[in-house]
Length: 517
Length: 113
Image (cartoon, rainbow over all chains, first blue to last red):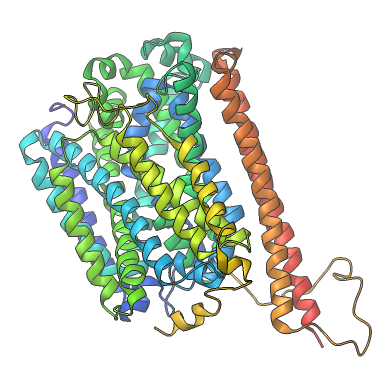
């Protein structure tokens, strides 16, 4: 991977990235929070407009893993990679129809406020929601930092500097999140989208141009280049065959939709819009941006299979993160497209990581610490700084781990624990605090156990512990089990709640109380 | 961009108006009614999207060979059918906006003296 960029292109990439970082820092300081805690979570005086929040929400859904690993999955597995993209888009549609507007109507600063307002909250639920949100955000941060660290080290041409790259990017993102607050990070996300979307669209156009604007020719070449032939557009390339493959496929696509429904950074943005109607309007912008982006990424992935499929197969799964760059090299030997795509990877990682850091900081400062009354004006800010520092250290430590396990973990937690609670609280008046607690902790425990006992953790050469074998099943994507289990636990906890039988409505009116904190 | 409450251009938004002198429902009761109506609209459309999506996913899981059948050149049946959940979702989103907007003016209208 050391030949991805020639020295002049390398200098260009790092110059553009450095300029972007400096401009973003300035924007964060100029537009950032100026009213302590309230402005960090939601800026009342100078909010972003709805379309700006919508574009930022789209950016939150697009992590650096989407631009690298998912494109690599499309290139090597075909249909299964496209299915994940489709699942994410359907998840966005469900988010817009089911969640965004009522959530904005009920939540003043975090989604836990909505649980209070709908009568299924309380201090314990708030702390639990905050902790599970942190459990979702940390793996997401670690994965993104490791991916961008690997890409940076490969571009520099010295794998030994990976840890340094992770730490530097971690420090930058922490500074942006702490100084920018919800408004500053939104501006960063807008700047990222303004660069990333056109570059990816240009790459997609170049791919189509290379194949004479004939999708049939492109797909034929992809099927041939990927080495899978006719199976390229058939389910099973990544998820496997038989009943295990079927369970994996359902878990992958449904789990992706459910996870998209409850991503903490997206919920944070939805809550910070001007009004419920503004949240809906922003959601449409989000959908438009993601449709364009996923369309471009699908073409880029299929183009990579057609043009560099053989090289990807030879390089192995670890090279999937370099798929866009390898395609850029194949499309433009001059290096400009590779440099532009490398910039897109860096900027995507930076912007997405900044927003997730902020969401994690708000969860820690407002939900975990705030539930016990310890939150003051600077709590969320310090929490964001702490989150950034810890995740940078964790990313440096976990850089050699199997990242698929960590990615699957956050997706499973998000889809099985957070999404059911969110939907029950909005749509089922009988949902209680006990149901929320059972769902949050039960689904979390089940997701961790399902992954711990899967081949991702032990029993295969690619496992976290290849020397041990304590797997009990061969399913690697447990969404088919964990998501229904999360719903079941929420229902069971609520219907067996003695307070519900007595007609008690816990937590009503707490929203107004929290607004005054 | 909002310019405040817009005039109603359609049919009378609420045909069964309360009789003169009848006591209007309490403010929080009306608010709850509107909220429940909006949530019901979202729930119905969300369930519609979810059911279509689950059917697509179940078919992909249980009959992968059928999804790989080429129907338009090298393009398989699964890729063509992927349009269905997306189309249903986008249609639901458009309908959601229209129905929720219809619920909101009705609430505003009922609040007039």
